Each structure stands twice: as structure tokens, then as C-alpha cells.
Image (cartoon, rainbow, N blue to C red; front, side, top):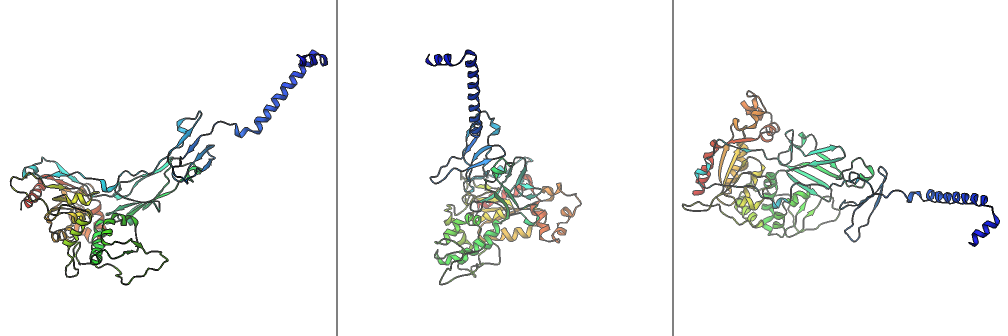
Length: 469
């Protein structure tokens, strides 16, 4: 009331009204100035992608995403995400993709098995057994390469087979015993596991992984390294240390059980080492104990292949030392395995009969018990000499009974790839004269087989008869 009295005495009603208008304008000006100065802090609520730190020393890092005006918080490894959103759609949220490996730990995988009970069990109708060529990665144009999608908003590769991941080098190795590296269209790929390819700010904070196609061979790993290493190192009874050159962590991991059984000491990768190692004696190189494959000649070594197989059984804790002998009235059934992909020592050791197409996978016969039966399926095209040298002769030295089954041209998928009068089908010796690479490419890599069960039946019956002896 006092203020109204003062205004009434000092100003007329018209002047009071004008003064009120000017006061309103002044207030609006002050408010406008306030919003202008503090505008960056009063915009819409930003979207925050937060990587929730789990370690005590980890810190949250913020990166400004200029392409989307979002604040993206990421550490080196993208994990869980916290989204704070006002009115944005789910499609606008950051998409996160981790490295995906379809196969779990190889040591926990089991393969399907079938059992032979009697001769009548082989009475199969006109059904074919298809035994595809062993592949270690998805086949692309008859070459084993990962199927990679390098397009759209994300890059990814789908891989199957023998996969080794080396976290220290951010590398995924795709190992194939059959791959001819020089013939492959590509041998390496690079992938950033984050599904927002066009966002350079976001992608710059994501680590790049390399996928490499590498040649590896289970057969040569044993015959050229493991067996000679056993012959060289076993006399020291573990009191020996291995110095490795051209070391490959995936290979060492694969055979770590054997390496630890031969040496009580840590491996030394000697390449690029700057320190000096001192020893009282040394063997540089490996002693190959025979000119033959997968064989130890007792005249060149204090051990035999029988000793080597006993060493494997002990190292891998394999229980079965002898295959089943079928007696009249017995209820036990022999076990047959016909698939070698991702097999482990204990499963092979449990078998009485093993069959497979000629290839590096048959090297696993080293884990078979005594008196087991090996059935080697020999591909069409003149691979008899390979089959005999690599597996028939070693199997007999290992006290493993041996049978083989030779594929006819009608059972080969090559008849679908070449005309009937082509030399590949009519005269394989012509291809053989072109050299090993030509022979390998056609008859070992491009060929799958479909077994005529009726024709194959006598071979299985013979295997059953051997187990009766």
C-alpha cells in the first residue's frame, strides 16, 4: 500500500502504465541475455554411452562424436552400455559388436560316433555315406577362406575350422592343413568390432584385429617336429630347456601338454632376445629318428614308436591301451569314428575302429590303442603312394590293423566338375606329371567323396572280423 501511495503521488495513471511496460521489456531482455550466454549448457539432454569400469584403476574416457553430437564414453574394450535418452529412438543408440567366435574351446568338443554290433548291422539300403573333404575354414571358390562382409555399416567375418586367437598381437589365425597359401585370393583381413563403420570418431577408439590365413599341417607337426623332439629330448628325462626359433604361440599352445611332459622348464623364444643364456651342453636342431614318416628306427634312437605312443598315453592320461577283442557272447560293442574334425586325444583313444579320407587328420592314429583298426579311404586320382607312405606303413609299425577303401570315379565329386572325357577323370597320371601342386589342387583339395555303402560293406565286415581275432 505504501508503494502504491508513493507512485500515485509521483506519477499519473498514464505514466504508471508506461512504466510497467518498460519494466516488462527490461525483464525480458535480462532473461534473453541469460539464455544467450548459457545456451550450450541448456540444450537437449545428450545421449551418453558409458563403459562401466570394472577394475580399480580403470578410468572413464569421454570422446566427442562430432558426426552425431553425442558424447560417447568408451575404453579400449567396449563392454556394457548405459543409455540416458530423452526422446531419441532405439535406432539412434550406439551399436556394439564384440568379436564372435562360433566354436567353443576345442578341448571340450565331442564328435558323433556309430557302433558296429554284428555283420547284420552293415545291411544298409541304397544310401550313400558322404565324406566331405576335411576343411579348416569356410570354403570359398574351393579355397579355404573366411567369409568376410566388408560393406555397409560394419565389417565382420564368419569363420569355421581350426581357429587360434593371439590376444597379445590382436590376431586371429585360421589354420588349414590343406590350404595352398599362394593360391588364395586373400590371406589377411582387418576388422574393427564395432558396428558403426562410418563414424570415424567412434571407430578411432576401437582396436583393429587382423585375421590371417596360415598354413599348418597336423601330420607334419608330428612327423617333422613332435616325433624328432621326443627322440632328441626324452633321454634327458625332463632336465632340458627348449629354445625356440620361429616360435608361434598358437602352435605352442596346441602342443603344450607334450612340451611340458618333455621339459620341466619354461620355454624360451630366443628370437629377438638381447640377453645372454649360458648352458653347459646343447643340441642345436632335432634328431629325425627315421627316414620314414611317423616312425622311430630303434637303430637311430634309444626309443621306438611304441615308446612314443606310451608317452602320449601318459601325457594325455589316456586309459585305453588295447582295442576291444570281441568274444562269443560278449555284450560290448566296438566303437567306430569316421569324422576327424576337431577330434581330441581321449576320444580317439576310446575307439576300436577309425575311418577317414586320406589327410592330415589321420595323424591322430597315434592316440589309438594297440590292435585298433584303421580304415583309410583313398581318394580317386592315384593317391595310393601317399596313403601307403603316410599312414599304412606307420599304422603297421604302431601295431594298428590296417584296411583301405579306394574311391571309384563314380564316388568322386570330380565327375560334377569335369567332362567325362577329361584327363582328370580318364588319366590322372597326366595331372600327376604336371607336378605336386597340380595334383594336390585337384585330387586332394577339390575332391569330395560319396561312398557307395553296398560296395563299402565288405570293408566294414572285415574290420569287425579283425576285432574277433
